[in-house]
Image (cartoon, rainbow over the protein chains, first blue to last red):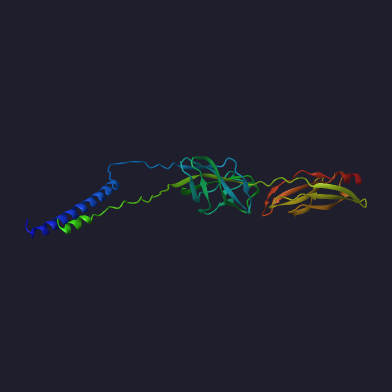
Length: 164
Length: 145
């Protein structure tokens, strides 16, 4: 071997060593990467729950709290068949009807303006007859006739809210 | 292999693991509807007044000591005396418990003892009434005749 070829061999050897060292390092890193990274592909499925209808029904025994010039609470029961609790935060009112329209026309009672409830109505999951009320939802005229005593007033409502 | 290639091999990019995706919470909207009710109150029939006693006034009149209980909030009482078919308001617009002395001429009794009753009405709408309730009889007046 000539004197000139020895440095060349050493240079090549150094590079080989460097390359092998790097390969080992990359290999390790590659092993680390291989243990961390994982990919998979395919199709999975699930079905979103379908919300069940929430119904509002009249209270079985409402409190008689409506006086001329005063306000009374609308009372009702809520049936929530969903497996989650609901918080109702707003209400809209329908037309008032009287159980004695000839003696005490419904015009003697006025429903409040709909909108955001003063206090949310919270109904538990799977509730079958949760008793609820909306305070001061109705007001009676100061000139309501005597025949209005004991009359029942019915108001359809729509409650809006969301799962809580 | 050249040094440059070796260095390039060193420049391997490591993919960082992606952190857990932020859970996106969805809530179901809810709507419920149906009928609701409220009931108008009924003015309760008031109780009878209490007769504390009867005394003579110079042999000409019967003095009847009367008292009554306080009406429920929002109501007022009217105390009425009935002698035969003649009705006379003794006290009106009573919003609290009270008492009074009623003077009845003996000559006007006609053999009938005075009977006292209480009627109620709603203060802000006097059309809402109840009563008269049961009566209290001042039988002692007849003994003064």
